[in-house]
Image 1 (cartoon, rainbow, N blue to C red):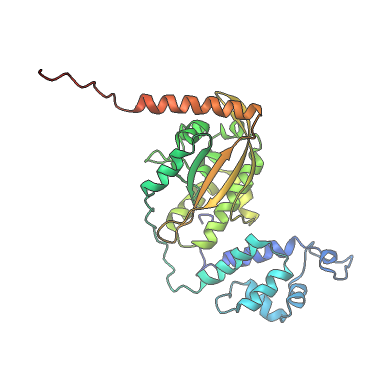
Image 2: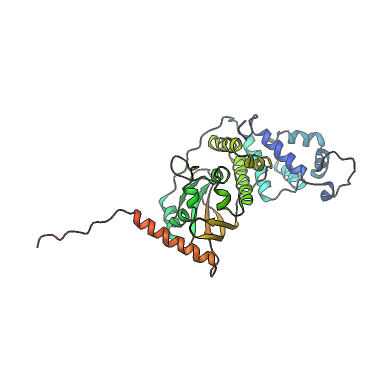
Length: 309
């Protein structure tokens, strides 16, 4: 097993997701009578069926992964019964769509080339760290400040053969990540949830399967987070970093959809500091350093020699 569902289609993923969501809701939360002799902390299958307005047999079949022919109205009723948030609801509907595909063979998606216009956009953001992340959490493009801010990640032994960092691989496989991310547990949970969402969108992505398998094999922390079946489509908020050169940084970050050719998911991630704070001053220091490094890396232009008079 490589950490992702190996059953026909994605039945195992559907089953585990629905079971995990059912287990977190108590009868009291659902407005149902409670009993001291209950064997499970969460809802029973028959209770979810009642809340969704379907038969117990039908819901049991659904929880076993037979979801391909289910109508959107019924899925919506199940989502309401299980109190799914927007990301979880999108994930469930994505699992239903992907289960209808005929192909069961994992495929290796060709990476989308980042157009020059996107790199120009990134480079124009001189006071913000900006980079592009794909659904597998590879950093596929960035500006100089992103390279400086995320230096521990770019310098990690977990980068791929092309020198690209993978956020999930760095967080779970590089011990230094515990120092770099002040809130490492939160970062790890969010990253695993982002990968879980991508697995729902692309259940037959071979590279994603390989990544999840690697992390599941090498990281007990990832295995625990993966088993939680939490889902996150986009991650925004505050990030606290302990940078080796400038010290503590508290930055806000925003994730924006970046439409590119093909079906692959790409996000534009922007880190900024609140004006007037020590974090802004430290980010400015990194920006100066990044600009200096960028100029140093450019080839020296020879001065033109005067021609004959």
